[in-house]
Amino acid sequence: MAILGAIDPILTKGLDADASDVSDAWRCRAYVDRGGYAALRKIVSEKIPPARVIAEVKKSALRGRGGAGFPTGLKWSFMPSDYDGDKYLICNSDEGEPGSFKDRDLLLLNPHAVIEGMVIGAYAIGAKRAYHYIHGEIPEACARFLEALDEARAAGFVGSDILGSGLCVEIAVHRGRGAYVCGEETAMLESLEGKRGQPRNKPPFPAASGFYGAPTTINNTETFAAVPFVLSMGADAYLAAGKPGNGGTKLFSVSGHIERPGNYEVPLGTPFGTLLELAGGVRAARALKACIPGGTSAAVLPAEVMMNLAMDYDSISRAGSMLGSGAVIVLDETTCMVGALEAITCFYQRESCGQCSPCREGTRWMHRIVRRIENGEGRPGDLETLEDIARNISGRSICALGDAASAAVQGFLKHFRGEFAHHVERGECLVPREVQREGCRLREISKEASTP
Amino acid sequence: MMLTRESLEKIDREIAKYPEGRKQSAVMAALAVAQDEKGFLSDEVIEFVAGLLGMAPIAVREVASFYAMYKYKKEPSGKTRLTVCTSLPCRLSGADEVAETLKEKLGIGWGETTPDGRVTLVEGECMGACGDAPVALIDDTRMCCRLTREGVDAVLREIG
Image (cartoon, rainbow over all chains, first blue to last red; front, side):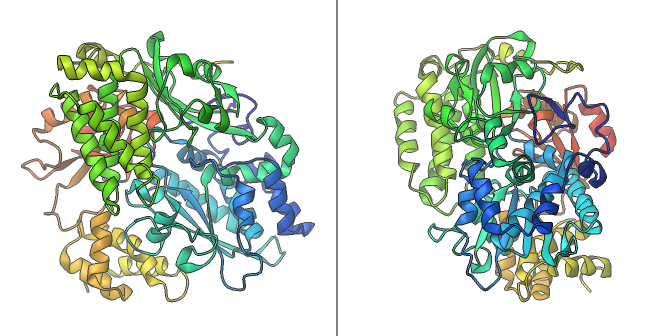
């Protein structure tokens, strides 16, 4: 894996496809050569107060890269500063959203940026202990992070006396074991406490009552990786790299019917067409049919909407979907939209934790109906029933998994209702099966990096 | 002793990661260590881990039965577990064909084990590697990327 392309990169500068040798670029020494750990060094040597670090992050308009897009500085400011007991910081690398694979590559290619961001974050919120929750299915990335952590500890960037300043931040890894819902922050807390990953009711939010009831902040891997850059380049420059309210660059995981699937780092606000071009365009130069811009939890958008869309939180939200984790799933003209939704609904019914009945039962019902339509056994009224179920799950479960499953169904029905109706009436796909199959065949990845 | 000394030491290192008196946090890691050694999680192993961490056995069972990567109380499955991702991005890159080919060559369906006890075939969900789609995971430790119908043979040779 590699970062296959970038426009004005920040997180992956020197690690993109243009760099001649990226094999050792993840190591501590290489990271330091790129200016790494300078932000942390500056904080401890100049004794910059935590409140100023938080203010700088706020000003940069860095927003949560895990899916919700919540302003990072604001989240940190919710942590009580006058609390005497232990506080905790958690890095969320439980990347399980279908289409998302940026955290895995970040951990493989730039793990020290994540470590530095975690240490700075822990300092800002006053936590001495940090946990890194890593998705169970990415053993290589986990091993890489652990090796980087050893390096950072040996170099004095992590541990009980960071850079001789007396600052103490310990980092430990907690492995996930295959439960998508644990990416939800309160499910993650349950999992960290050695229980089933079933989300908690909010409030209280983790900043008030998190890991074992202590104030806790949970941020995504990419968010932490951005923090050192925000501080070293300055909030204004970071903000300017994106657009107002959407500071900086974003890693987009581009998958599906695409010539060069992979991760691309581009400024927030980059036109979708530019990103598509960077990734080599639609597979075999076929026509774009639709795109899911932010992982399967985001509503699908038709090609004509996508081609006029800027890739930032606010623009995608206005178009009726969400940027999510930046997982861009490309669907070309060979896609059967019923089949695609079948795969998505199957995922949610399996991953529902079972705690809330609207989600537990509803996701199964939705999958059963979509599957029967896909199998040519759709019944009149099925589409109305689907919409009804989706509406009734939405907002009626403890966490957002139910909402995500509903949003997926609603998005497909909103934009491709005709194709679903055809499936129900005729009992067959609008796109012939052999065409679909051909569309899924892999092609040789072109080696040359594309230039925007 | 139910587990080897090496496994017990690994579990002790996991316990040390968490705050004083919060041994339960190490249950996920402890179960993984036990599964690595025993192949699957039997009732005896569950009770042993519960004793080790001062938990009620039912609390350990709750965890073992919740997370997909634990082989909880299942019959000792095949020597190798091959998990094929069938989430949308993998399907858009031919996961269905790869799965069909694997089923055909192994002569088994999802969740089944070959008669010689070599391989158990499992349908898995997103592994966070959609850029390398379609992917499969061998024994939760090694990922096979950009699988094709033809590439399946190499995978089968590897798990031989």
